[in-house]
Amino acid sequence: MKNKAMCHIAIFAILLFSTGGLADEKADEGINWQAISSGGHMNTSIDTFLISGTVGQTAIGTSLFAENGLSHGFWQRVLIRGNTEPGPNVEVPITDSLIITFDSVISPGITSVIISNPGELTPPEGFKLVPSSPPIYYEITTTADFYGSIRICFTYDENDIQGNESNLRLMHRNDEDPPGWNDITDTVYIDENRICGITDSFSGFSLAEKEYICGDANGDEDINVGDAVFIINHVFKGGPASDPIETCDANCDSDCNVGDAVYLINHVFKGGPAPCESCK
Image (cartoon, helix red, strand yellow):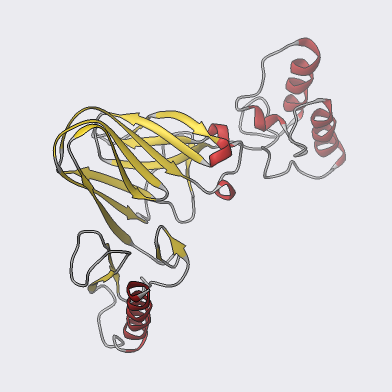
């Protein structure tokens, strides 16, 4: 209770300070502060949320993000650290929504995650980042010596996903020139809103889903009669299915059937309503 009260006081002081006391500061001048989490201590960095940002652009509020409150859409950077002890199958619960499991840790260290809103971050080709506005980038590092693979699990918000949750992917930023992305997805637990991936190294990670247009059944990035023909060929003649299958669902009834072909024909030739925007 005492720690919680201290956190509320700190949050109020930060808001008061950032909105009233820094009017004369430069807009690009950096400021740093810390929000005390359960078990945290003032002016320390371990077991606390270290928050840094830009005057006039970053604020801390009461909306929940992990254990502490951040105003979604305003924050710039959050650093969260977790102790990583030696042993087999070492689980490091960074937050309730991010758990890292090492096959084997040889010597102890600290595993750190910087959660940021990177602004201009090029998504994997053919994909869009989840969430998309603002995108979230997780930069993971560790000082522990480890052996074998690492399993990383994120909890996601299903409302951030346009299509079917099974199409969600966990992407790992690589060190190629130019940098690219590797799909490390292992399992998507739809009932738990959780996605896990396997890697053997750390860097940046983001969630992504394949970018597509509802009604573009044949994948030519256009809505025309060819999509209706593609659907009819699939439904009645066993032709290839749309990829992803959600693009076939032009009327958003969560199914791919002749009704979608009729819907598209009505749109193309009779000026009927356009395909929906949230096919799943």
